[in-house]
Amino acid sequence: MTAVRSVATVSTVGLLCKAFFGLRLASISAHGLPNLLDALNSEERRKSGRGIVTVANHISTLDDPVAWAVLPTSCYLRSDTTRWSLGASDIMFTNPFFSTFFRLGQVLETFRGEGIYQPTIDTAIDKLNTGSWIHLFGEGKVNQHTDAHHLPRFKWGVGRMLMESAQPPIVIPMWLTGFNQLMPERRPFPYKYFPRFGTQLSVTFGEPLPEDFVRKLMIPSLESDRKVVLGDEEGATDEKRLVGGELDRVREKVTARIHDAVEELGKKVLESTPDSLP
Picture 1 (cartoon, rainbow, N blue to C red):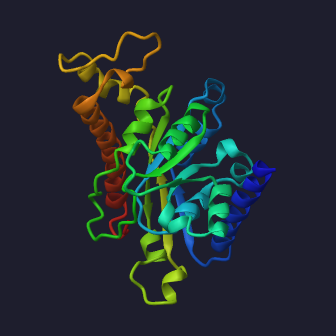
Picture 2: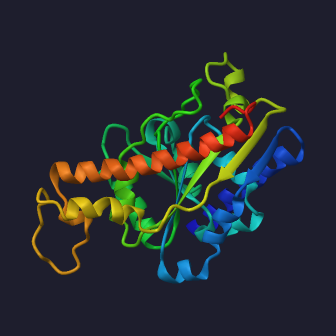
């Protein structure tokens, strides 16, 4: 029953977003969408249980779910083609109604200040290990800054998810533009709660990152004299062979690689449309 309610929630929200654009209250364009759809529809990926991670810049409170209006409606009808995302407890899970709504909308509740080892990150890793799609905003919060070419550093939980997944997920960088005009921050009450009409939005999906990029970043540390091996237990993952500062350094590198991929995509988008804001 919960699965049915979840599909109903996701479908309703997705169709409302499509209707918003269908009524020409705003416009949205998608670029590189096949990069995501090919991954979602890959039979080989499904059979192997390999997950998908999309990572985007975060420029408004409506980035998710509005960005997913570019997806075919059929994607809303199956849990394996609907993203799971992470949402802050103090913003999204503030009362029983919102908590139920966001959980049915496939949002995992995260708690600020509890770090990268909180149970929610464990749950996200479990989702990836069963072939699910996880969407992340690496910055961890909305940033409507003026320097669109440079993103704040990403949270290390991004690196942990990729390093601890049983199989390397398909990682797809994304770049959003115009959403900060749809829901500008610091507007007076009650306008701050309503989207602005007539905005032009775009969603760009980059090429998937190389499958072995995480492994390549880990190899120098695994071969370094500084590594500490936690026993020789059979089936130990590479991530479990790194501890302490070395583990932190590798996790930082993995997270930085994702950050750079998103930022580089953003620069390409902004260079091709110089009048566009993020």
